[in-house]
Image (cartoon, rainbow, N blue to C red; front, side):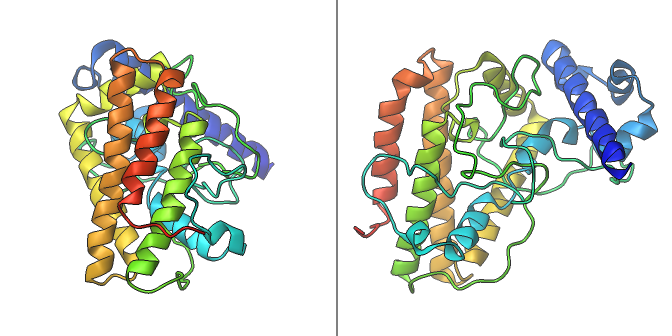
Amino acid sequence: MAELRNRKKQQTHDALSAAAIALFLERGFDQVSVADIAAAAHVSKPTLFKYFATKQDLVLHRIADHAHQSAHLLHQAATSAPTARTARTDPTPPANPNFSTADPNSSTADPTAPAPDSTAPAADSTASTATAAPTADPAASASPAADPTAPTAGVKARPSAARPGASGPLTASPSVTLPGDGGGRIAWAAGVLRDAFLAGLEQRDPVTGLNDHPEVLAYYRLVFETPALAIRVQQFIADDQAALADALGNDLTAEVAAAQLIATQQVLAKRNYRAMAAGITADNQYPTAQTEAQTAFATFSIPTP
């Protein structure tokens, strides 16, 4: 019975998000009210607020699912097999990349799968939360498909162990000691994040910007051309950077490196998105994106294994 209830809650959550994004894409974010969304999803406003505390959350929960993603990757790599700690220098993404963006116990496998939240209290639709995401040029994870909330638009199948799915925001990882000290620790971390980014490029993961599905691009435009949403995205970036700095040791070196690493991811994803928006296909952009990722992360002096 509990499983059935949870399934129904997830279906309601998904239906609300789908209805909201469809309306936002059709009319614009500011022209759609919470009452409009509730009516389209055939629920009451109080029911809607049980699942989404704010109007913005109906869109941005897909980005919030990536909260602390980079920090989580480092913790995961530091506690995994030694091979996961080895920095790579060749351009080929690993066959089974350590590329988790959410709770490893989750059952779905996509960066944009909705975050189940059946207990969120009702709140003012202008309230905000701070989680992690990319810059005000699409570098975030967003992957609507046939409808703007479908989770796998344009994403190629990845190995089943490569990335446990995202059914909610990342939870804090247990404290671990990262390999290396000072610059060595930063180089190791850059290698982990580079491998994850390369794996995402290969799979056309929207978080890398290398996804040319029309609905993905439409979602990006909605988020980054709507001031209320774009401002929230900046909060996500700041929170992600702080989490990464903490994972790296929370000293001066860690804070500077976290800012640089997050900026590197954002610049790479932004360049890929701009190529998609200009009409270049993801397949045609892939070699360039791969080379640029290698070049960008090489500035961190990643050691040769």
